Length: 210
Image (tube, rainbow, N blue to C red; front, side, top):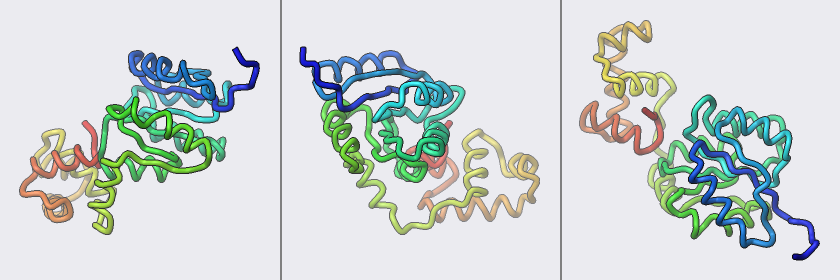
């Protein structure tokens, strides 16, 4: 064993033990990397980050207690130099853009773990940014399109939960006419044929989650 210091110290944040174990196995043969700590949700990730000060954090997005996006914002708020790679099963362009905006340097899909993870870690450690090609293609496909407003996203979320216009109006304290007009905007912006189609596009692109 060489006595050289490990150059890249890594933290894995994921609520699935199997994923964390897979990451650990993947890093084991790499002489320039070491898994120094793990966390199972966003809140734990913030505490562990303060404790371990990893060079690279691998962050899942969908987690209990606190999601990855909130954790990225909190960690980057406290440690602006933190380098975070999002590892997710979601290829949605909106989700990816939110993560990058929150301060992530890279966005990778879990199904490409073995292929891309090691080179992405080295690349981000060297100060570069990276994004899975599938996600990059989706982002490019929708670039320049007008995004949904926060209020339209609220309506779409309530549609996804099975609410009719009347119920949505009551929950958001707006008129049914306003709901109808927002639904019309949502369908137009997403290129959806009806409400169900809008929900499936919203889920696929990461605009909303169930």
